[in-house]
Length: 247
Image 1 (tube, rainbow, N blue to C red):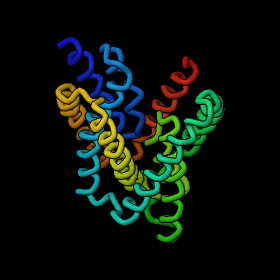
Image 2 (tube, rainbow, N blue to C red):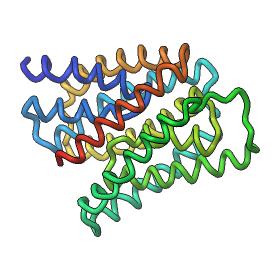
Image 3 (cartoon, rainbow, N blue to C red):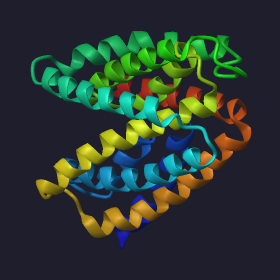
Image 4 (cartoon, rainbow, N blue to C red):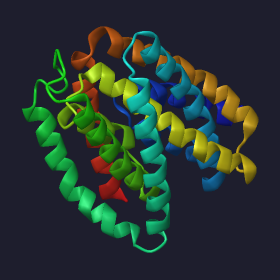
């Protein structure tokens, strides 16, 4: 019961944040570990709850017409490929190298978000659909590689790339990000389940709280778009920066 009391409320908050701007793992994974769950078991159980929540927010974006199914599925495929590449690279390189790079990159990204007050606030596509698709697949491949190598903030980086380079409005970018995240979450969850690294009762219980968080958060994005996404992106970037500095 002690574990449930710690994990469930924090997973709700993580799901809420994740559905808006990504980065929910910065809250949920430490919550599982704070409850005394071993690291690998925490990773697997966290994947179960986050997968359940992401299904709901993805469905909500799809229901409101904010997901281009062809583009999203192709991007998701490239994200999975990138994740596999990143996981293999992580075996060859020191994690400290990437952490050092992130300390430089994150303030630059935060400055971009602060300066670009109209992030994703576009009324129509100003680049061709083909170019948008190629950019989205490239972004998914690169960020997927980062996700496999290190991980935190993956959804946030995708959201910024899709609004900044692929010129999607913030709702469509959020919907596409959810499809990509869902595909990588499912792949990881299957791996953890096969290897017996999931506490299924806790995963299901916390998953219900994650569903609630994702449902409320995605609803806010659908209604308010940029007004809710931009400040939450900045908050996630700050939390990620502090986490990396503290190690």
